[in-house]
Structures are given as structure tokens and as C-alpha cells.
Image (cartoon, rainbow, N blue to C red):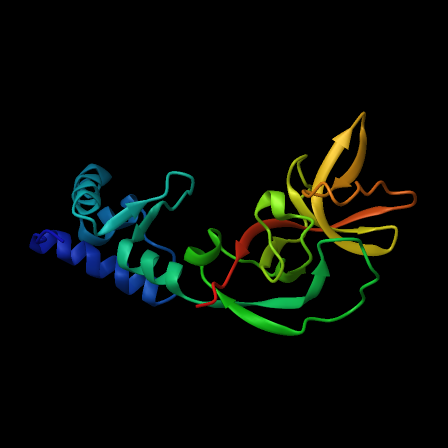
Length: 207
């Protein structure tokens, strides 16, 4: 990291104190007010310098877009536990009614997104999804709630049986598609309830 001027270091320390106190990261206007700058333009110049030096990051999609890089990295490495449910068949569907077997730690870096209370994991059994590189023994991380898009892999309850398949819509009618020619498509005769959309696959390689 390139060295900071005294003013830049003071701004960095101010941001760190605010975040450590549980408050949101200060805006440029709040930085200007705290340090007595005549306008937020001066604060913006310091912020740009801190971004260039790798101290701050800017998330353009958020109203309060500033974030300390060190905290962002720590947050990405911080483990959060999500419930892991017993094996969901990736072959033919079968009846399943059970509670989580255990909880497993995941990080933003390991799954690619920030887990929520709707995030859960399932252990795969079978080879019907090998065409999507989802193999027997893998753990899939899913998000409950969002409507699936055609082509996404989902955990679904079809005619009261749970399974993991690709969600397909043809002629306005949804069905589930295996990614292995050994297995037939699953066309619901009664109901199709999406339990979650797959967001990540975790695999442990044996030595």
C-alpha cells in the first residue's frame, strides 16, 4: 500500500472508527462535515486518492458506497454457518421430510455471494446432474425464495418428492430435466414446488 498523507490517514481512521462503532460507512458529505471542509469536493478528492492507494473501495450500486478494503476482505473471509440437509437425490425423486443434519461454515469467497437466512445446503447423491458438473457427494448451496429462470438448477418438490434438476419451461409448462441421458425428464402430474435455486457447488477432492 502506498503511504498516506496525514489528512488521508485521518480520514481512514475516522471511517474505521465509525464502522467499528456499528455505524454505516460515512458519506463524502459526512466526511467533509467532520473535518470542516468547505464542500464535499475536498472530501471527494481525498476519497479518490484513498481508492487509488487501495485503502477504500467504492460500490457503485449502494447509496453509501465507500468501504474500507481491509474490512471488505475480512468480511469475505469471515465464515457464516448455513444449514446442511441430508442427501437430496440427483437421480429419481424420493420422499424426504427432515430437518437439517448439521451446519457448515461458508464464506463469501467460497460461494461467491453473501449468505442470508434463506441460504441452505444439500448433499447430492446420484449422477443425474453430471452434465452440469454436479457430482455424487457434492454439496450444493441454494437460495430459497427467488423465482427460478429456465436453465437454472433447482431443488424442487415434484408430486411430493424432492429432487435436484434443471428447471425448464416449454410451451408455458414447467418441468425438470436431468443432465444425464440415463434419466428421464420429470413432468409434474400434480404439483411442482421450487425449494431453492442452486447458487454454488462445493466439492472436496480426496488425496
